[in-house]
Image 1 (cartoon, rainbow, N blue to C red):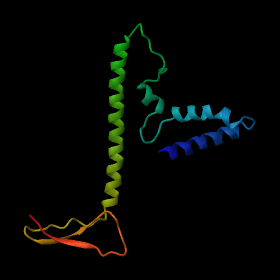
Image 2 (tube, rainbow, N blue to C red):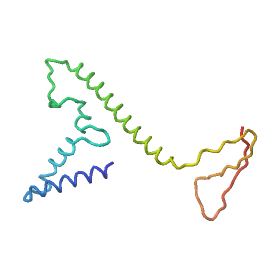
Image 3 (tube, helix red, strand yellow):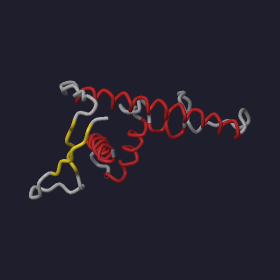
Image 4 (cartoon, helix red, strand yellow):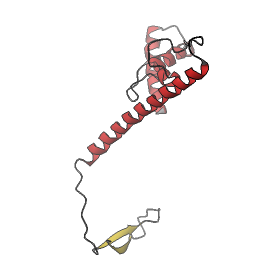
Length: 143
């Protein structure tokens, strides 16, 4: 995730440097970060700024009118919005993971059915794979 952030920021900086050849990278970095935080991300389908502030509407996220809403009401609304965000991100992540697992398992052989009292062998693992020591199998019966 951090590597993706770095590559995206570098891409933003590269584009900004092409447009502003005389500027130093240090001066362009805040603009690259602002661009990153203001763009909609493919995984969350939201802007990072929206996730942090809990704002879904196009108003300024810093526009908190305390005369309209008390601080307590604002905090409660923010909490509810954040719950919705995290549920939405979790569902998106779950959908992605499910599709990846289904894609991996599409050519997989079906699981073998075992009958009761059938003998099977289970490979014993001590956590240290070794090419020198032989594999140890123990005999079990299906219950």
